[in-house]
Length: 235
Ligand code: XBP
Ligand code: MG
Image (tube, rainbow, N blue to C red; front, side, top):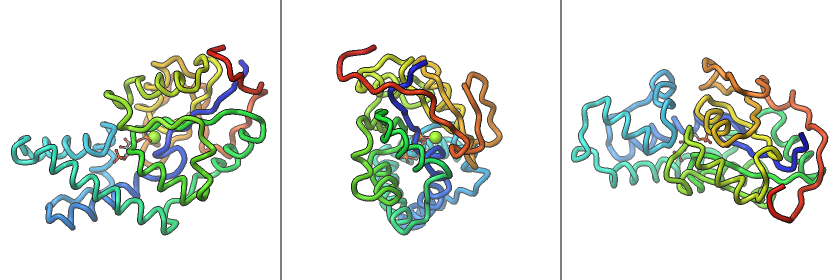
């Protein structure tokens, strides 16, 4: 298989961001006077759903709070505050990239591969992480960025990956995906994409049938033979 593009998940794959999201959620809850605290065990259970707002809705349901008691607008307000606190923590250097990630990104670029991001997180969080880790030029390394707000159905639905390969104008067989979670792997597989999984702190208990490889981290990954991407349509 000749690979022409690498597609990266964000949370858990590029960095151990979920712990930062958890702390940022708790900070936001405290700031708005919401008596919610998510410990690591609770957050691991909440990660069964993708998307921070969806996670808040799930927790509200667990608490028996109706949509009237916890309206979507209030979830959106607290979630936006969470993202502000997340960006501040990331900017302070509290969330470095996982081993091998920067080397792989730079090696892929040097070999003419195209790069994409495909995540269920919010776009501002991608900007914060990449900016802190790779500098102001970092977002320019990626030809395509698909974020949570770009699709109606988040992972494990294939929508985000289908949108990414459509934007790349490449056949799925020309792309290689990097994921850390079962939900992410299912999304990529449903889009027909070959997927390498490097489990993260919060997904280490999951199983990854269907992954092409499961690696402790991406420092273990060797790029296969590549051909430069064609600017023409799908190949
Ligand atoms: C993981 C997610 C996200 C993050 C938080 O995304 O499900 O919801 O936990 O981000 P990925 P938001 O596909 O990168 O693994 O609060 O912005 O949703
Ligand atoms: Mg992930």
